[in-house]
Length: 150
Image 1 (cartoon, rainbow, N blue to C red):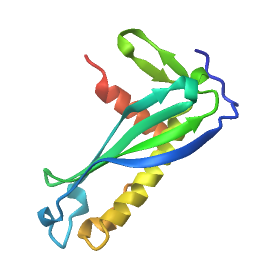
Image 2: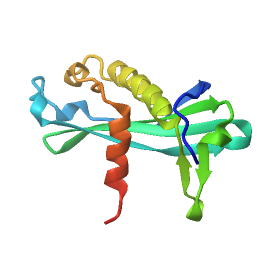
Image 3: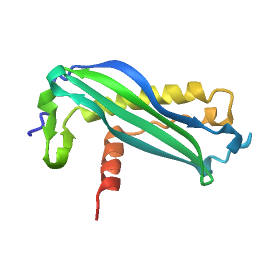
């Protein structure tokens, strides 16, 4: 599928739903050493109906501190995408490739998740360490590299 650079992509966020949330504030002290905070990300297609121009992306973050998992926050982000079928490619073994629009979807998911985490960690030491500003294209590339089998 050829990717076009100057597309007028029309996307709307339809809903945001909690998939998994776990926070263990008792595992952190009042003083946090920022060098010991590790943040990981996860994403996958949570739902897809190209005939109805619907895609749901599960996106989440996991915070660990000094090797101990503190926070896991995963949400499903439901989108309407005009002419979705032009961005979806189905492969063997039910593999799905989403072209062009994935950075847009994950950019919305990242910003929304950042706000959710700030709200849910209010009053705890982790509140001062919201999700960083990340280049979504690099994040996608890094996640793809991490899932390759050698």
